[in-house]
Length: 300
Image (tube, rainbow, N blue to C red; front, top):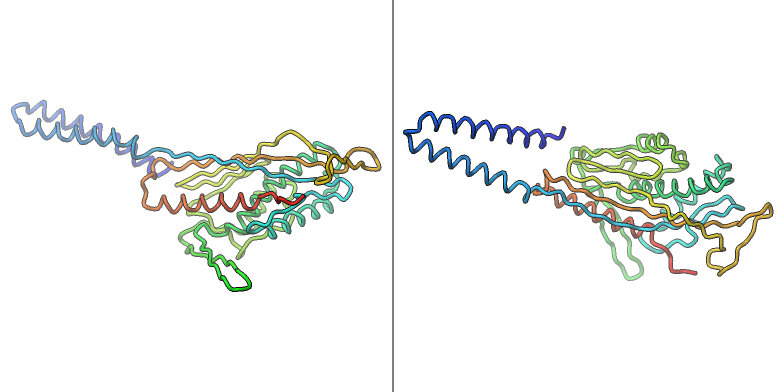
């Protein structure tokens, strides 16, 4: 149990015992006006404390939603976004997803055969890509962006700020273990991990399955949950109504839209903690970057 929950329960039990004990003493010594006044003061102070708790310590919840689009080429055994955008980290995403697709085609080509498996590898790629974004781009929850702006080019670098005591580290083996235990199709594909370590906030843990990824620590819980659209577009991307066919029958291309619902829940017991704003900044940074990571190109 969270230490603050234990503290809250202990405070409640202690307050009840204090009021009961003080009341018993004041009742027994009813001739003392000072004891009665002191007992009333204690009771009023504890009542004010109890009334303020629900207002000061409230859970804060936020929701976000984004859409990911992947096109599967049944002839080339390839799955990727048809046109990648130009946002921050786009080159990293394109390289990671195409490499993962090529690894899958080489190691498990049978997953491109049935429609059920093709739907599965589409959803798995969303989870794999989110994890890649976090390990490659959000490698330190307190990272700092430094911009070098010249006349001919602008370069961004990201510096780690967290000391060992200020984060929970996860190496590649730990992350890949989660991918494998969750039966993610791309569990053996290349995993980009900046600096060799993912540095999440202190006491963080993450879990995942085929349809969700969850990061939790004493201050906040972030859940990414997939919401498939259930529809498939068989047209050639960017070629109007053309539907190329396979020699063996069936459409060559399949484009699927997958939604990602993001749920953020901040701890009520730490709502007024002096470090809470650092966690909110981290969440804002993470979600802003994720939208840019999955942005759709305007090219046709």
